Length: 212
Image 1 (spheres, one colour):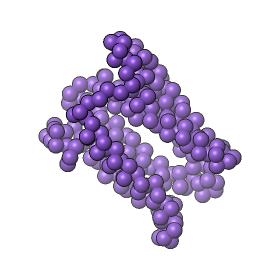
Image 2 (cartoon, one colour):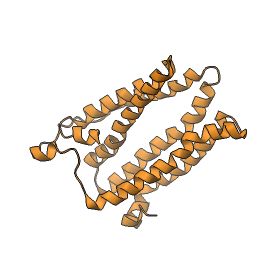
Image 3 (cartoon, helix red, strand yellow):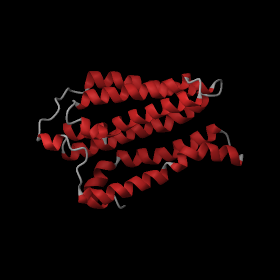
């Protein structure tokens, strides 16, 4: 919510750089935490960075691409995110064997994304618009309200599975944390395949793509 509001005043590239910096500090920093309070604070910082990055990625694609190319790039963007979701959980599990703190070094990948963002994304000035509209935090849309509410609960239910999978696997004695990481990676692979085919699927299904 705040990222969309701030993008009316601050260039999106600047917001993305700030979001990636917060993401890296929260992700890598958790490995250096010395208390549960510090650990939770850094994880909250990671979540704040993620919350800034996610909408900006789609927003920048909408700014720079049109029609078929836009749909294709959305698919590629989601696939790239899913590919890291396939390889990073098993990698983090392996790195955590000598010391659990080492698992958080996988977030250093964000530093590479930060450098590529600074180099590759063109700088755009913040849009100039109606002052009353710019200072309005939320703009209500009846057409988007119920799909947004539905997606909120769908994502809320979905993420209870991967977030608690390692605990379930351990408590039931059916594997190790590495097993849970492998299961999550396999499920993410199916998302990657679908996202690569997003553009042709979207242009065939149009408004039916969300309910399907």
